[in-house]
Length: 130
Image (cartoon, rainbow, N blue to C red; front, side):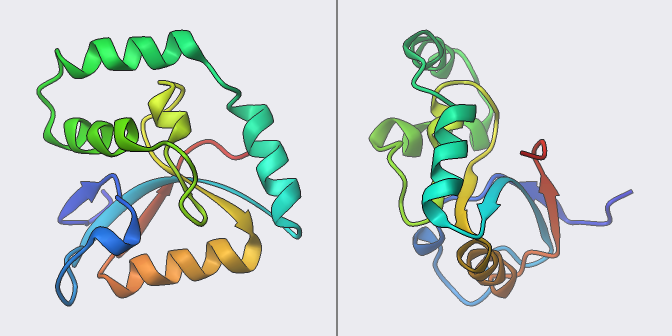
């Protein structure tokens, strides 16, 4: 048992309002971190290359899925799946995974994780290790 109040698929960090909007939450994220940000992004783009058929499948599924978290994250991904700092939704947009990824240097990714923890996150569930 994870002993978390709820599991959240986190949105871009700046979209949260209030003191600790994720208090007691667990989050699911993918992480690709390296010493060099360019190397992390090279690996990320190699692991999740552009996939038009995956994007079309995601668009089709959005109209048929009732899950609140999926719809909200899908709206974010449809607006922009370009990286926003280290936060990246393209793997979700291309239907290759069901969570956002943090991509960058170890320090950048660690700083972003600390920001989520400051919002109240108590548990981090990682997508597959890359």
